[in-house]
View 1: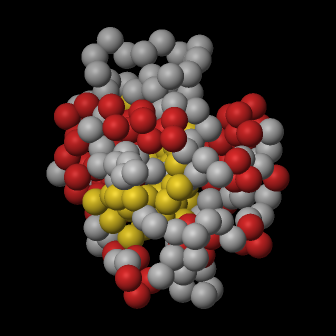
View 2: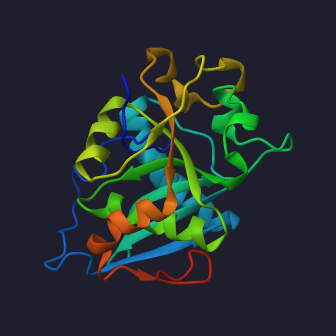
Length: 220
């Protein structure tokens, strides 16, 4: 059965349903800022945020991403998406994990998003929008992601259309780190989505989201 919803590596919990001490802004998008975490100190800061959510949700800590698109609300980190590059073998992690055939998929046009995590309403959507802006600014047109059925249903409600990628299951020899204990349950699946569709679908809700630094890019 075809499923068309968002993907991204394990989302610890629904991007818009989680507890936080921070109150949501009165005006949609106001008070939010997005930035690109690529230096070691910045990555460590965002990774600690991811770990705090994954330990509670999955009982472990996922591997460090190559970089992160981070979203803050009034100075507090509230959401992020990890960004992964091709490895030494020229393949993306999800591509390798699910033994995808690059000759049959436009993976050279894709950027891989992983570890979508959020602890505040609407923040997850802002992180996903900022990640789309990031990918488009770097000449990529597609996002390769994976998620579970719960996240898939949530993304459907946001109007996002993810293309289901046929695969033969997970190659467990490619998994590293204690945070991947959910894979044996068989609930994760790989997907692709057009970054422009992602940007356009979430753009109206990102009014007021500011971008700081040179990493994320400038939304159009």
